[in-house]
Length: 424
Image (cartoon, rainbow, N blue to C red):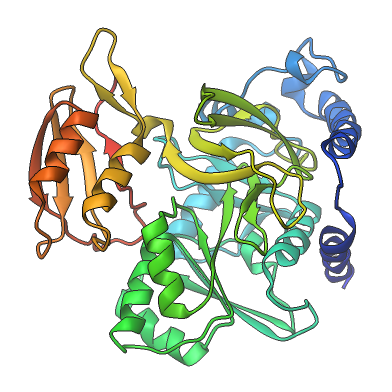
C-alpha cells in the first residue's frame, strides 16, 4: 500500500507540479538535485569514493559508458551486489521468461546488447515506484483514476514494467519470443487502450489491422526501443487513427517522452543532459546523462552511443526542456565514405533518399560492409529506381548491391534500416 501511494505521489508531482517556466528555473532545480546526488554517491559508491571528484563540479567526474560500467559494476552500485550474481539472475529470467525474481529487494534487468555489450541494471523499490509514477503521468491518455488497459510488446518483461499494474491500470506483456500470429488473436481479445511496441512491431500490427486480421481502437500508440521513422509513424497513425507518441527509455533511464503536440522532449527534470555535438550546424549530438534520482546504480556523466538531433524551435506545449526532432540511431551505424581520412555519412541521409523515391516501401535495409561495398535490401515487390541508386552513390560513393529484404523471424532482434558491418 505504501508504494502504491508513493506511485500516486510521483504521478501527481510529475503531471501537475514539476513544471518550469524558464531554463533558468530548470537549471536552478537541476543544480540543487545534482549537489544532493553527487554528495550521496561520493559517500555511498566505493567507485566514486576513491576518486578526486568535486560535488560542486560535475565536469570533474569521469565520463562513463557501458563497458566501463560493467567493468566496475561491483564497486559502482551501492547495493553491494556483484556482477556475476546480477548476471545469473537476469540471464535465468531471459531463459525461463520468468522476470519476477529479484536479488533481495532489487529488480535486475539486461539491456538488449545492440552496442555489443549487454548491460545489467539494478533498481530499488523506491526508484521503481518513482519511475512508475513518472511514466504513468507522461503516457496515460486519461487520468490515473480511470480504468485503462496497456498492451506492451518487448523483448523482455521486467519488474519495472510490471510495477505500473494496479486494480485500475491493467498491464499485459506480449512476449516477442512467441509467434506473432498468436499475439494478433490475443490483442484482439484484450482490446488495449494503450499500445506500446517497437516501431517495426507497430508496423506489423498496423498491417494486420489493415488486412482485417484484427480490429482494435487504442486511444494512444507509443513507439519504444528503436528509431521511429516518419513514414512508419504516418502509416501507423493513419491505420489506428491516433497520433504515434514516443518514449525514449534505456537502461540508463527515462530519457525523453513526447508531449501532447507529439514533440519529443528530453526529461531534463529527471536528468542533466550534456551535449557532445557531432555537427553543430545540424544540431546532431551524443547525449551524456546524469540521473538526478538514481542511487542504486548511479548514472553520472554516462555517454550514450546514440545520435540525437536537436530542434531549437519552442514547443507550443510550453515545456522548456530540449526538443529532439528525431533519434537518428547509434554512433556505430554512422557510415563512412572512402577518403583519407574516411568521411562520416549519417544514416538519416540514406533513409531520406530511399523514402524520397519509395515513400511506401515499408521495411528496407541499407548495410555497408566496407569502404567499397554496401547492400540495399528492398521487399521483393519493390523495384529500385535508377535515380535512387544514383543518389545513394552520390551520398556514399561505393558499390551498392541490390538484394531482397526478408522479415526476420525473431522479432526480439532490433531492426535497423541503416547499419555498418565493419570497424573504422
